[in-house]
Image (cartoon, rainbow, N blue to C red; front, side, top):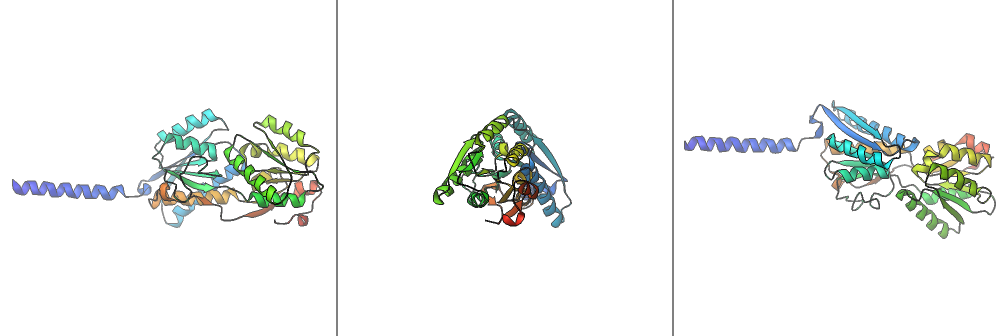
Amino acid sequence: MKKLVLTSIALLGLGLTLAGCSSKSSASDKSTLNVGILQVVQHGSLDEARQGFKAGLNHELKAHNKSVKVKYHYLNAQGDQANLNTMSQQLVQQKNDVLLGIATPAAQALAKKTKTTPTLVTAVTDLKAAGLVKANQKPATNVSGTSDLTPVGLQLKLLASMSKGNKPLGVMYNSSEENSVLQVKLAKAYAKKHDLNLKVVSATSTNDVTSVLAGLQGKISGLYLPTDNLMASAMKTIGQKAKAVKLPVVTGSIEMAQDGGTATYGINYYDLGKQTGKMAYNVLEKNQKPQTMAVQTSKKLHMYINKANAQAIGFKTSQIQEP
C-alpha cells in the first residue's frame, strides 16, 4: 500500500511538470493562429498599416519555418463609436490569440474590453496619452505597438519652403482626435521657436472640412494637415479645393499626400505595420508579453512628392527639397 501511494504521488508530480511545460508553449503549437483586427475607419494610411502588419507577421513565420496558418478576423468600424464598442467585444469573445487595434479609437476600444488578451496597436500617435500604456519603454499593460508620431517640425519646415508671400501657414485638424491635438501642440511649439505665423482651425465632420477650408481661402500661404483620420478621409476633397487656388498642402502621411496633398516628409504606414507584425510574431512565437515590450516608432522617414498636384499648383519636382 505504501509503495502504491508513493507511485501515485510520483505520477502526480510528473503530470504537474508536464502541464507546466505545456503552459509555456507558444500560441502556434496550434495548427491555426487567430488574429483579431479592429480598424477605426477605411483610408489609405490605415489600410496600408493593416496590410503591412499581415505581411510582417507572415514573413516572420515563413522566415522561421513555421507552417502554422493565420486566420485574420478583420472588422472596420467605419468611424462609428457604437461599432467600435460592439466590434471590440466581438473580437475579444472570439478568443483570438492576439488583437490588433489600428488608430487610437480602435486601440482604446479593444483595451477597454480586455486586460488579458495580448493587444498590439499601430497608427497611434501617443500610446501613453491615450491611456493604453503606463510608459512607452515598459507599457505594464496588455498593450504595446507602434507609434505613428511624425516629424511635425520638419513637415512645417517643408511647407514654409514651398509657401509664397507673408500670409500665415494654415493648420487644419480634428480637435476631437487626441493624436491630432498632440501634433498641433508640436506644430505650435515649432512655429514659436522658428518665428512662423500659424492660423490653426479645426473641423469635426466631413461637412465641416469643406466649410472650414473655404474660410481659409485667401488667408493662408500653405496648408498643413497632421495624421488625422478625418483629414485623411477627406483628402480628395481637400486636394481638389487646394489645387483650384494653387495652395501647397503638406500632409502628415505619405498616403494623404498621394490622395491629394502636394508633398510630405514622413513615415510609411506599410513599413510601420510590418514592424507591428514582427512584434506580433514575438508575442505569438517567443512568448513575449506586451507588458515588457517597448513602444516602437518608425525606423525610416521618406520624402514624397505628388508630382501631378505639385505641377498643377506651379511647382517642379526639383523645387521641392527634403527639409
